[in-house]
Image 1 (cartoon, rainbow, N blue to C red):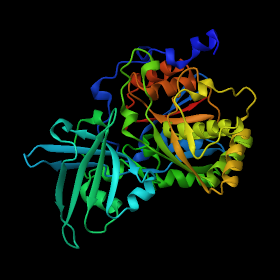
Image 2 (image 1 turned 180 degrees about the vertical axis):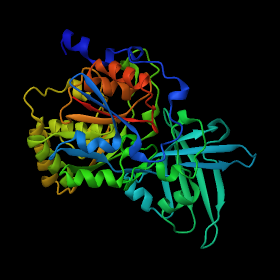
Image 3 (image 1 turned 90 degrees about the vertical axis):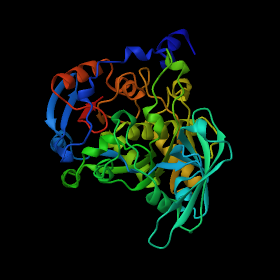
Image 4 (image 1 turned 30 degrees about the vertical axis):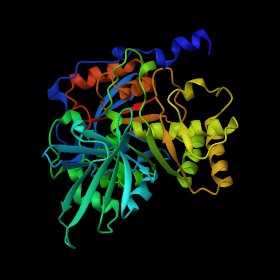
Length: 412
């Protein structure tokens, strides 16, 4: 890496340069009654326009391809009690045994998950906690055992005795998790409103919130306008809320999230990339498609890969001077053919920050993010220093911020 490359490498960025004042009253505690009535900020070529989200079809053109993350938020929060009465809170993050989400949810006796644990100091290693769960077909017992501590989480094993799938057990026992900054309990309406209308793939502990504004009516209008819909899955982890505590990004470890994308979706992206615009619906969709590009680059470089994986800094260190997006996507499709794969699975730790060159997306639909967050770094990578202009406009024009807040479409 040259001296010039070091100076622009995002590891040297200070997160304090990506902040703004966000008063508590500007954080939306609840969604609007109607999803598509949220405000829509349109940023294009340095100018800003102000619309309502249901007018999105007017902003797009026939042939545009919208990339949606169809992940579904699971009932990931569970509460148990020790014999002493101490309450233990468990937030399931991702499965470990088996590692594939669909396989983990299909288990009927036991499963191991990576989890965050509240009041962990009170829970002893290998100690088993048990709850009796009421069920129409008879009560059953659910137990959880603390297996090990990781750097920022724990390994826990769940066992149960009624032959239900773990997905059914979670629905019986768990609670839908809300973003920690809302500081409120989950309510009945959150079951519907903290899910996108197109959510299909169980696995997230946080919603891909850019998609919360879409209604079936808006989707129908887009389809009638010949705007394509492409669905990918990135299971959002609690790491999306992980604050950057280090002075520079060099000492911040980006969270890792699971990806599952069909061959058909990649073929749609290849065709759209060649002829039309690609619009990522949310930061998770953007990270997914950019990660697919880098998987293709690694394949072209001759890396022997069993599944998709992109490290935090790999995109800043790989030589892509001669690699076009079409080549990378075609390399992924060729690899899938050779390995007889209809789906591409794996994980990504990709950090998109200033210094990163966007490869696939021409526009990004996204909400307004927390100060000093990796999501704000991503926005800055997408539109440069104009992120300040966008956020100043949103603040002065009473836009609502964060997960249940208003929306924007940013053209690169």
